[in-house]
Length: 121
Image 1 (cartoon, rainbow, N blue to C red):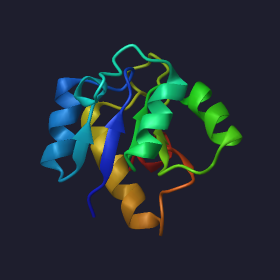
Image 2 (image 1 turned 135 degrees about the vertical axis):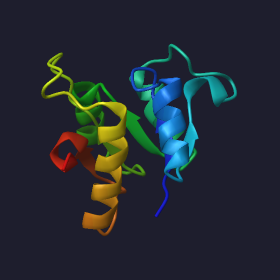
Image 3 (image 1 turned 180 degrees about the horizontal axis):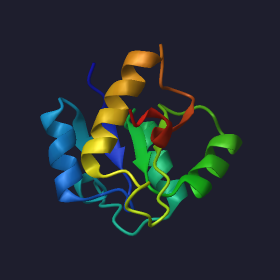
Image 4 (image 1 turned 45 degrees about the vertical axis):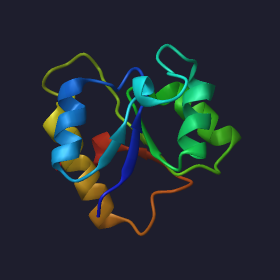
């Protein structure tokens, strides 16, 4: 299965975007939107993901967990925790693999907050 993904500012990198596209996902970034959302606040990123029916991928789990708790009506939020520990942190290939593992293990991604670190296997 492929997902329609939106990478917020903190998750965006050209390398991650490329790997996700190679894995078959449709990927949008803040600079792709009209008007561009580069530098926008989290509420605007989530509002765009909802309007565009895209699953949001973020490296800012705390703020997006709070937004999820306020409104669960969204296409899904994929969160990556980073501890600045290379032995624990997920690299971009880990993230792509975790998304694939999540897709295989659940019936639906929408309306849920997923911690991708738990799917790094």
